[in-house]
Length: 281
Image (cartoon, rainbow, N blue to C red; front, side, top):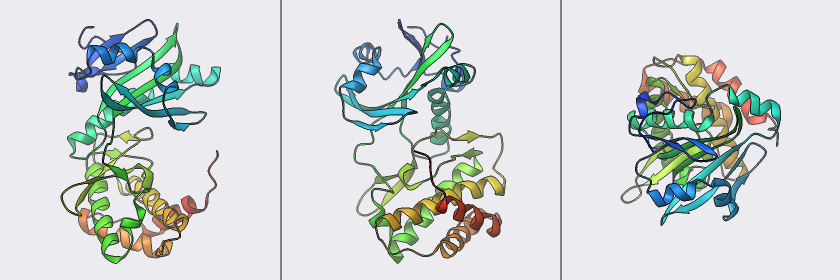
């Protein structure tokens, strides 16, 4: 296994500590932190997923917590169910390599996100069959969606809204658009006492730009957060402000912290649309 020789849908310049990995069926980049024993088991990722209780199993992705050489990891497979999707994804950067790059950009910006340990593609000839992302296990961390009761109430809401606005401003100023800031993608990592820090999961829809984001793109992430917070509270039958009040509250904090003006009309329209749409299964 040699270092930095892979060009599999990916520019290795910013991932100089990763190494090229190739087996009979897989090719990609792996972290030197993975042991030889872990890499050997990783050569058959589908069998690893068959042996665990899956956390997600849909047309597009299959994922679960696995164990490699005594340590837990989160393994996600990106499924290509038909020929057109296989062909389309064969011609562009696959999700695991995109997530690897963006996770390192988030970490460099001071935002907590699970560490990526491997980004792998499985091809038959030049045609992509599936891709795999191996990340660190969250452990004691949870998500805002699972801990939503802790984030309601006047004082708890003020703390959460301050923290999430600070986080979004940090990534937006760094030119990063997350693309899907729903409560299930916001990590709550406990610290001492009742204190906690926030991080981000699921970078599949993220985009990185060469400069700080304009107001319109910032509103997209903020609207996704507000609509998800509102719907999560409703689903749990928790008291929550109406959408106009939530938009005003989050926007006021975001603008005060960032010094940037956001269009309230655009934010409210986008938030109401996201709150009312029916997602495809």
